[in-house]
Length: 252
Ligand code: PGA
Image (cartoon, rainbow, N blue to C red; front, side, top):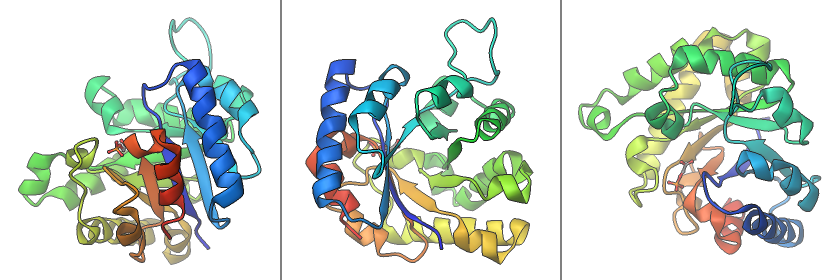
């Protein structure tokens, strides 16, 4: 059975001290009031990882980085390897977020190297895909997302693929307050699940958690999550507010 997941992507927000306070508040909420059947993931900036792991109830909350390097180690100034992420106690890595693809030129080749590092280190990739507004308006979103998946995660073996969490995040909905309608999100996630079934078989498709991301908040989460193929959310802005984040976790 696939899991219900709510993951908070803090992006480049919070100082270390603010991040510790946020992590503590989220952990208290989740421990005391959070739906027990929902897996909660927090993805703070790299430098917060160790402290966030120390300050949350790790029986209830998994910690993720938002990125990692392509290489295991060496002379790559400014990079953070998957092994380093693992050594903090984090267990997941977000890869392929549209902000990484768009602002930092991360293409499929780079993402495949990162995927290999994450999997080699026994971490769980939270792999993102999603189209721009132009592509959505031209009706080519399915072809676009299929190509993103074909070039990356669909290159993995069945065994490795089954370790992934996927997230569909239409770029036009990220941080814009413009959420995909529940029907648009459900259509895409059901399409993605059908592609997984074609490639890896029905069982793997049924067991893969696919999240929706893009202006998901305390108000719209319930309607989004009520769809059969939407297994949870990757939450940006609303993950910075502990009460809103709790409401999203409890939206099932
Ligand atoms: P948002 O971000 O919820 O602020 O739209 C989602 C994401 O980019 O992961």
